[in-house]
Image (cartoon, rainbow, N blue to C red; front, top):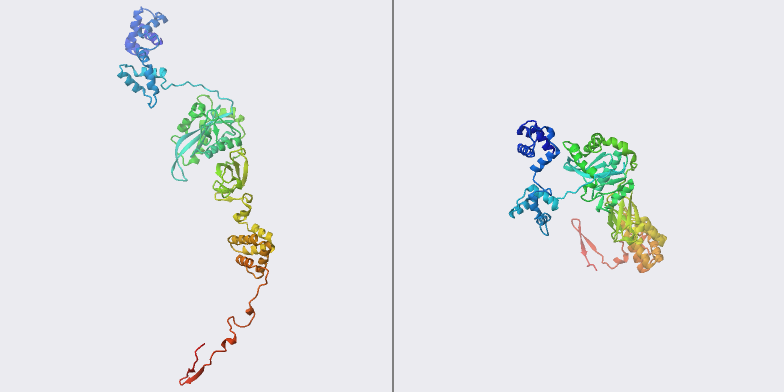
Length: 539
């Protein structure tokens, strides 16, 4: 109606159709139709502007616009008769994909129904469920210092000085819901370690922690996404308990659940990252913190019309939870107890009681302790063992977890092995100590175990006596002890060799051995040589 009134007012001033079209911003043919309809309604050029009333404008509009009782034209009415067919094409069917509007237009044309594309598109959207756009509502911001929305966004690539290759960089963005103040944490990965490191840096930046965090369905945070009862990871729950905040994850593929941070991802990528050159990740992170405080924090926000940093200092800074103590991030894993009485946690071995062999346990390992908890059954979650943390490749066995008859051998406990032998007899203990008197004593442990086996077979008293005799003779050999016990000679005095104290040689013969031998006579031969005159053969 405003357009018709402007055309008629300019025409009454005496302007031509071309000038009226330029002044009103419409086509000249449209101006002609408006003027002809007004003249048919009784308007003349001699009449003043006062003659252009609402009634006259209404008559002109009715004349130039076709009659549409339901607001649609003839093409729309053609489509109404084929609504079911169009609806089936839009929705698809079993084994059939939905059709595009261009294809539907072609199929209708084959049936003799030729309509404009825009009319067909509007009809499919309004009547047939094609790409229905739902409405949305603005949600109140809530109380200051309560909610903080979190989301990951991919930024670009940085040359990693450690590996010498380009690596993809992700930004973990924290946005305060009320003030819109933000913090950006750059990382190469989206692991739980990276998320917690970003949270720790964010709390230092904000000077405290928000009471509720609204993250996306990050795998390190949410293990089972559900709109009502989402399941959070054990590691994230442990960190949330340490800091004291709650977690309210957004629904899957529902960006409207965290709209404050969704739009900020594009802002960070375009305003902070784009066009910049960083030497490494540390340089990028330092510049990101400056950008958050000085650039993003001091801009005029389009929605709140305030500077986010100033609004945060005024409204939210005093309502945050106190900044937490540094978090000793543990390792959570599920392990199996092997038949060697040990479990492996972070590439180190820890012992567990024998009755748990073959079962699974939940392990929590921080920088100081490794705690093992039972899994399943009535005692699920019960602490079953605690060990000091060992470096990769280390081992921490507890003697109480191992069988008593194998603990000493497994731990190479020489003192306990000697004490066990001494418990059977004083000489047995001394003999065991002599057996282990070696630069590599653990290589002689089997001899001591054989000595204990002799005690179990013959009893402690005979073995103690045999050890006493062997010690007197300075014979350190378990085989000699076994021979004495087998022959029952442990109580007999040893018989010393008869020639042990004689002054003769070791191989001296008795003189009688030479009594029967014949004599030999020598004859002198000129020239100094001698030869036997007679010789008897040796007997």
